[in-house]
Length: 274
Image (tube, rainbow, N blue to C red; front, side):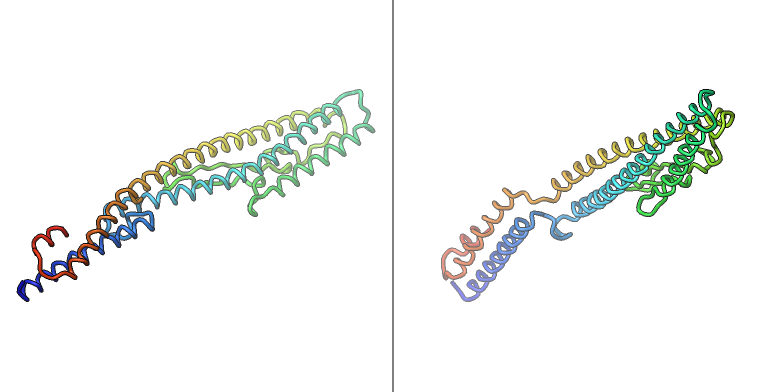
């Protein structure tokens, strides 16, 4: 073999060795990371697709956390409204008792004291019911839940609790008393209307919570499907990667061995490395 032929052969063998070593390194990287997309050049289209899916997954996950926080807020409001409902029912009982001729004005004094104490407690509960520092039952402000990955109306849910203070216009219990039979009879209708208001708001809260439960379930399902798709696109095919790694290692070892040899059939040696 001439010196020129030997040099050409060495360059061919060296190039093939480098190619096989690079192939082995890529498969090792894929096997160790579990991903076949470790850089944009691995598959630009797949990298763009998985990047978009990952952004959506993160947005859905954040929306899911928003939903769970909103459900917690609703549970706080529902608990307070439940207490109010019990107190308003008791106030209706006291008004009915005080409106009866079988009770004297002296009896009505005690009933009226309990009535006003319950009214004050409804006021206190409404004022003190907060979530993360936000008052829930003292205003008619709208509470918005960003439940989805976009700003579309379909990804946004909202609810109003209204002003549920005893002194507020919705319940209108601020000046109601039952210290005599006439005002007690008038109080009955006012208290029953207040009970209807509390029930209506509590029903609204329950319906909204059920909706958010469905939103959370849908978001979890969407995340599961997108993660599965992302995995199918970007995860390493272990069997294929191991096969490719083994092939590259064998050919690299063969190239290194042939590089140490001199003479022989150059074309045969190079053919084995292709």
